[in-house]
Image (tube, rainbow, N blue to C red; front, side, top):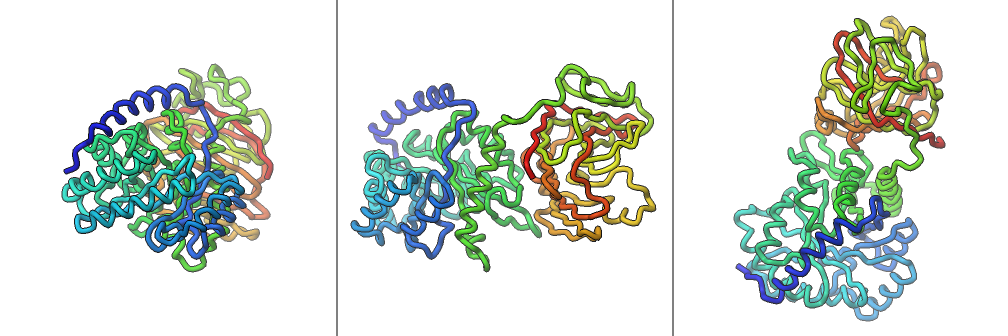
Length: 513
């Protein structure tokens, strides 16, 4: 097994306090992190073409796929091509953040892999001599207990080689590989004695649907993370499938990025398009690049509450109107008292909102509740219209139409308009069509009973989206010419009979449709 060299130990000792002090204390609260795109998602294009596509989309940075056979394979990029690419990067304004393509450790290819590393290091310096990119990759399949020694023996010489050249290596835990957890990556870094020279890539898609906590994996990975990669992972028919970041709304990317920023991360965010996506028939690489830029921008925009107006002051029910005795304020939150024998609503009287983003925290402990939007006031604290369910985990994700009469001709379509993991469209005639985006239980797992959760409701035009803890639970497009509503009251529901639910940090931002 590789033992740490004296030179590496000295570097590691110097790196640790630097990372701890500078990274944690001096980072701004909400910095604008650079957004990058990996050319792994641009098969069939040359590097100059890929640079143009990524720059045109609006990205700040780019990652080159440098595995054998890919467009940045160092064996295939001539000295003349390297000079041209360096100039194109400068002209485009793109920062080359990483080369993707660490060799896969193999005891039968030790010398060959070391030569490969030398060529990658050389390429990194040729393309960006003043600020060479990090080199990142995965370590391959097998079982952790069988491969751990091999990984250490391989990574040790690679780290010595790259660190002498001023280049950082980063290894990515992969859900189906031997190193699949951040803790295992940290163990390799510590065993080799390579803190600061060998870092981690954090990609939340590899921890999704594995009974792992994102906050816990981030806490482990954060001090060692050099590179943040985002894409979605959805569970369909018992299998995990990757998607573009933000496309499925299955991973709380904003909350993940927020935790990294709060912990001092100042690197870039790179979009990775999985081969599961780009090998799919009909994949349009240019369109996908543009969609990734738009989605990443929305993810980082959600980090900021600027433009939102608090509509609950945290002290009393000023601006709200509800049934006497049914609602109270304590500890900075609105609580239903549980004393009402029948359902009722607490109505915000600020305005009848149309297109908006509503954010709040909520806690459900008992009974049934909901958040009402674009709804009618029927009097006597009764509200008619769109409601997001707040209840136990297995019913969360529901959009339904409150107080619709049982004999209403459209009751079947509008009672359960959209449920967890669904994207539903109601036609002008009220007919319903549904696409399942993800398994319901996989979506609902993001919601925690008897704890505080965050909710975001986006109402834009005919579309209503609900997110809980950053995960999109369901989407409703209501084009029913008779029943759809484009504005109305916001309200909170107490279903009565001992309901125990609370709401806090309620804030609203009006948006253009």
